[in-house]
Length: 253
Image 1: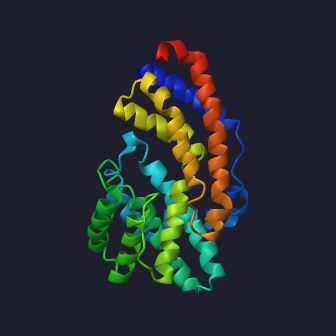
Image 2: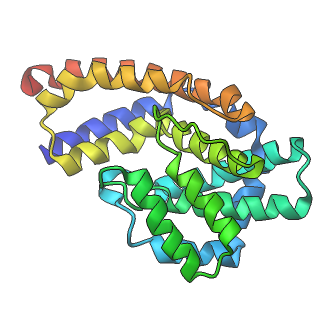
């Protein structure tokens, strides 16, 4: 089964390479560069990165690679949205740091039930250990708590916490586009040792679930760019499904 999943992943990645690149990466390039440089150079972010690198479940497709992308792209969204909202340069840097911490910490309990709630609790302990203030810890933990899709969060938030939460959510859900088919889904299937037959049987239902994400993006820039991520992912999904059936249909079924 491992060999078959290696082949399927290679097949899917070849399809992903021919898919369109989401326009987010070109149109928001300067903000992504600033966020990426800060992520690599900020001392406090580096401490959180070092603290969680061994706790992230790489075998479930939500390890450091996933968390780094979420952190950097959440940071870029925060820079864009915060500037429009009139945040001061000093507070934008603070919120950028918090977005990076949220991205790094949001999946530290990924394999557990209610992973967002448990992740927020663990994040609180780590942030306290690293000396973050209570206001910043509360903002990061609330963003982590709210990053799951299709949950009802009725409590009102302070504007800066809402900004952080929305941007973390959107950056995480960008991963349901092309990234899902280049890495995440195959890592999860391998870790769960899911037979190809069962995977193919559940495939249409899984893709329908991804389609539902399209309408859930929260920030203005997330609502602008997020649906394109999902549309590209859906196109990839259809091509991958056909390719798997053509190559493995009889064996898999």
